[in-house]
Amino acid sequence: MTRQTVRIAMNGVTGRMGYRQHLVRSILALREQGGLDLGDGTVIWPEPVLVGRAEHKLRALAERHGLEHWNTDLDAVLADDSIDIYFDAQVTAAREDAVKKAIAAGKNLYCEKPTATGLDGALELARLADEAGVKHGVVQDKLFLPGLLKLRRLVEGGFFGRILSVRGEFGYWVFEGDWQSAQRPSWNYRAEDGGGIAVDMFPHWEYVLHELFGRVRTVQAQVTTHVPRRWDESGKPYEATADDAAYGIFQLDGGIVAQINSSWAVRVHRDELVEFQVDGTEGSAVAGLRGCRVQHRAATPKPVWNPDVPTTEPFRDQWQEVPDNGAFDSGFKAQWELFLRHVVRDEPWRWDLAAGARGVQLAELGLRSSAEGRRLDVPELGR
Ligand SMILES: NC(=O)c1ccc[n+]([C@@H]2O[C@H](COP(=O)([O-])OP(=O)(O)OC[C@H]3O[C@@H](n4cnc5c(N)ncnc54)[C@H](O)[C@@H]3O)[C@@H](O)[C@H]2O)c1
Image (cartoon, rainbow, N blue to C red):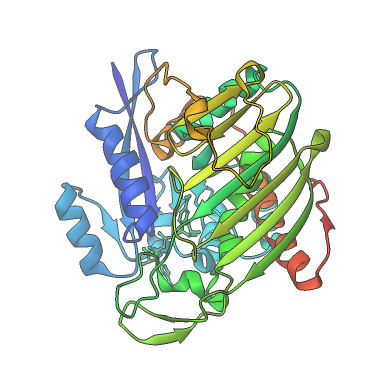
């Protein structure tokens, strides 16, 4: 077995996503399983170099996980020829500059979404990376969730017949931060720091809709800030300048209508934090993060509207669970594995900075649609 070390500069690893999903659940998990076996006698061994602003935090992280390399000097890390990949999970507003530096240093790069705070910036990153000839990728983790993989299986197996509509419900109550601490960082609620739920979630909806059902052709959104005052990590009150709920209607190729509500000001009366109901002529499905239930047309009940009598049908019981039929790994890790194979073996990869730019575009158009009170076309982006 040949072991091929791939050195990855990981920036933003003290954050929620950088630490938990990317460092621990992806890169360290790969090391725990002995590396990524390519099946041809080669094992990729990912070697993280932790990058960040606070030395004491990086050192503590490295010590906790037995890692040897960390650095607070991004320029020095990028100047190091042994670094193969730059990964960025910093706050969104800090991403563009760092990614540009990495491209200029000739590094392959992988980053969180949204790739930039605006479409122009996102397109520029895609263009620069193409011109530099580096490999590039954007996290599109929802595609690798068990629930959505089952949904994809249903679509590809022709279960739905003609797909008519998609209804997505995403969200949960994020505490204001005064009497109970908030479970998300405060920058998420400040527009000036790259926050806002449309900017956060519309990039996800773009690739989920596009990959499973069809390209998004129009957007009509209403965003709002339901909770205007919150308390930050140090207990100080601040004005929430960013949207904390975004209600969107999207027209997709093939006449499919998708409606997705995203909110940090909603209490959960669902089985999962995100759920998509898909209705088709032959059947319907409700998919969450992990589960997926279906109802075929042959098993569809015939409710009759009569508000004068109590409901007698156990509607929720009339659905059938889609079996796993396989083992599912962390979605973040699954996508990392594909990216590493793309870098090392040049295997096909489509979740690049151009795909990331489509997500930024949808967020930007969603916000504009809301501000202008009208439906907007989503033009196809060139490269
Ligand atoms: N793929 C997903 O499902 C998903 C989910 C949540 C967040 N995200 C994205 O991941 C990125 C990080 O989000 P998070 O929730 O982990 O945020 P976080 O606040 O928990 O972490 C942010 C990281 O950026 C660093 N940072 C660098 N410059 C900074 C600055 N000027 N101010 C503050 N922090 C700075 C912090 O030290 C920290 O390591 C964001 O771009 C966000 O959109 C993706």
